[in-house]
Length: 197
Image (tube, rainbow, N blue to C red):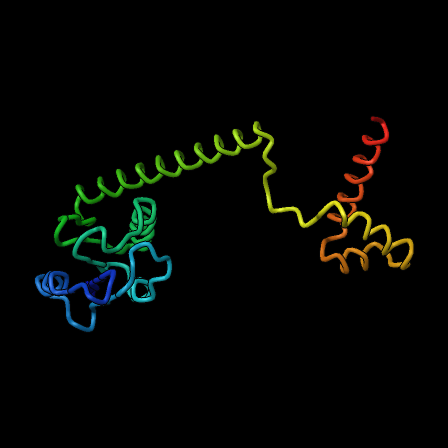
């Protein structure tokens, strides 16, 4: 038999759950089927929400007081609702009046999905523009280089005077073999430029 699970969330321990619990009561949700979370909406790990989602079966309904209680962002809410729809689970809010069982709810699902995709596209576009601007300014992208100019001298000394092979020299310096050889190549090119001047 299909059942309704209710998810209630407050951001701080001082906030009251009364409105949300009253809403669960109006829906006739049993106390055992109410999942209470005391966590910020921005948190990725919400164990009580995860537990409620695990309990849901096709035909069941996940309910909450308002849409902002369940999601961190439009993208998160849209993904969550799409996952529920795929599993055959309904979703409803008490205060906002959203119910995915009806045609209006399904329309809202599609609108949320479109808005979420638009938001993702904007973020991607801004990221690409930011990277292009950084490259144009000559900013090096990627992880920081663990190589300093004096390390080339140390690497040469380790391999020539101390007789270490490249792998062992790189380990002593705390870098990868590839980083060490790139650093040595850059040092050689730098030395050649100085000699050319």
